[in-house]
Image (cartoon, rainbow, N blue to C red; front, side, top):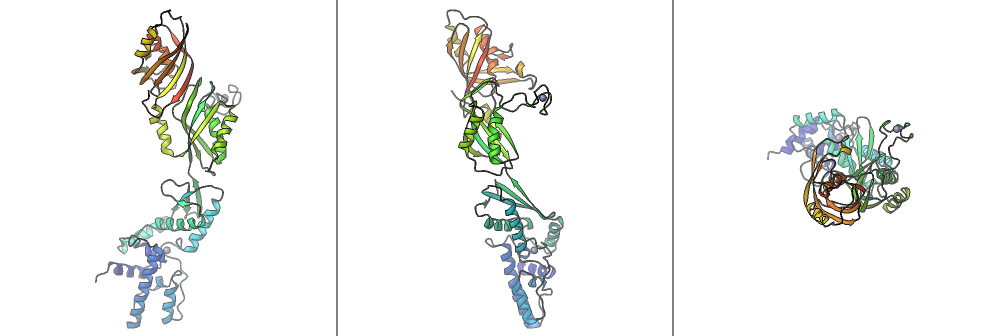
Length: 451
Ligand SMILES: [Zn+2]
Ligand SMILES: [Zn+2]
């Protein structure tokens, strides 16, 4: 019988002094359910038996028996010593992995990693490695020289075997290939172990119960955060923000190194955010603590902001949620309540208000970039839908309106008309100049369409 395995493994073992793992790995894609170390051991047992038969018959056999006397194959040394009592077990390193795959080396690396990670709280991890290029290149050359077709890469072998040992040292944690909490990188060039703690993403909603607070921290325009006369040496345009109130307690509890606040759209500084709140994701980089006491943090946010900002927490999420809330869901429907002041008094007969409210419901509004944001946004036409426009309360000079519209509609301009840049507008329909005195976002809906 023509045997690929025999024809390949004999010249390979004759030319290379390898550990069991490095021999087994050359056939690593054959027969699942074994480690490469077990494959290599099986092959060495077979080769040693083969050697013994040949030796008994013709005092000859496999030319170079070095691999059969490797450090991790004592059976081979003992068998050969039966015939050559002076033969000493080899102390040579494996010529392929330079012993990086030996159990003592793997164990000592795993212990080093476990000690480094002792301050971190995590339930999943992944092992990666950086190998000296000469080890990788050398194995590639050997593969083509010996026509090896079923081999596995040395890196995946190393990562998996180290992961197995780490799993026993870290019984609370398990390997996760998709979204591990911790990534260990074993740099075998510089003999270093690096730990990366993947970011923590917390999904929640905030309410802003007082006007005059921006969503994000604004650095001073003049000094850009350094501190100057203009900002009273705070580096900030506003002394408080939703971002700072919400992010700081998470950042401190998680013991991260930096944090980011991602809001699903934003309200104006002078608008309140009411109802069930606006969705946000807080991202904490390199967290040490992952099991956060949400109840405690929620209370801290309310306390430090004196009740101006309140949050609810949905739980942990991932990076894809950040993309979702920044793009798709920022166009989700919103409900607003606005108190509108009029430049002139309303006539006694106000029946036309009902018509205006019907005319402004279920239509598309065209808005050229408003004057007030033109300095930071490109001049474009934005089209957004109004689902409903209701008039709730009317006095001579003030009207309270309730609007449900697509996210991104400029509500203040819908009322004022922004000197014709928004069309149609409430002012235009009324025939009286109108502007928003107070604005509240009263709901952020979960889809783009909502009545
Ligand atoms: Zn090896
Ligand atoms: Zn400044």
